[in-house]
Image (cartoon, rainbow, N blue to C red; front, side):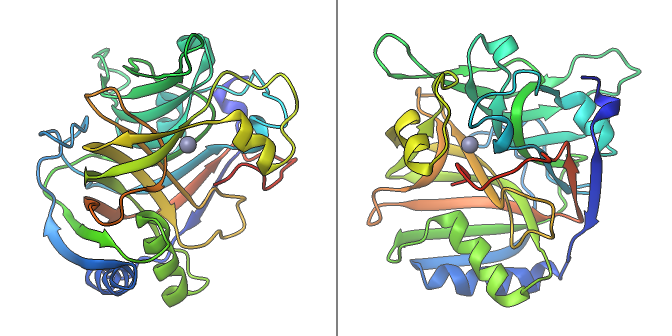
Amino acid sequence: MSSSSFPVEKRQLHTPDLSHVAQVIESGLKENFKEASVNVVDCPDLTSSPWQLAAPGLGGAPRLLDVGGVPYLMPLIQREKVYDLAQVASLAGLPNGFILGAGAGSYRVAGVNCEMMANIKFSDPDSGAPHNIGSYSAKVSTEDGSAIIEKFPYTEAGPLANLLLCEGTPGAPVLEIKARKRVGEENFVTCMRKSLAAYFGEGPVGLGGVFMIKKGKAKLHIMPDFSQTPLTTNEGVNKWLQFYNMSSPLTCLSVFISCDPGLDLRVEHTHCFSSHGDGGHYHYDVTPQEVEYHGYYVIAEEIVRIDRPIKTHQIGRD
Ligand SMILES: [Zn+2]
């Protein structure tokens, strides 16, 4: 399937002042964490350790992308659903932009279905220069079920991806978000998303960025290879997925939107990587007493929906 045949839909998002969003998220986090603070700051250099992003900042026309979807992965994989993220960035209007976020890696380049932590600054298409790719993949070992976290030096994604796309310019104002000691039931991301949904109602507010889990452990999953039997229930999906309690520090690439403006979105999606062999799809921390989060997010101006599945369902979106 050529990229030109992908349907592309766009919606403007609600873009309140950063300081207003900061207040709303801080009060939401304080209901779920013993300590939390959200401030508007100039983005630090995110190419530095521990952030390890492929671009220095989150500035420049930030937008969220929701590409493909879970309905292409299950009940059974539709193998023709792979996406070149360079083409995706072009379709979304920033061909030399910076992409970060969570998706499936392409089985065609990885050899097997896998998790992808997308982290790519694209070069100008006319320049011929190589893209700066800092992406990782997570696979399940077929020998012992252990996690295999590797660099993923490709731009091809599998059947779904949830991404932030921006110019990657340094120093732009961002939200600096800190939280520690979880006292409520919500995970870090869901807590922020629900606080925005409760305050802004049907005006969708979308955020993308990066956070560290600095202390404690988190429950993550990794997809094994495609299921040979149809996955038709969440129970079936959870039997197919491999779950792990993984150790900090984890660098987490994260996008979420407070509500779905009728585009059949996955409303939050976060994938993590590390240099110590841990990584995957974030569910929640399992060490509420110890856990400490620290991150930077921007507010997206629009959402771009690429190749939305016509035949859809709500299975497997956790
Ligand atoms: Zn995921």
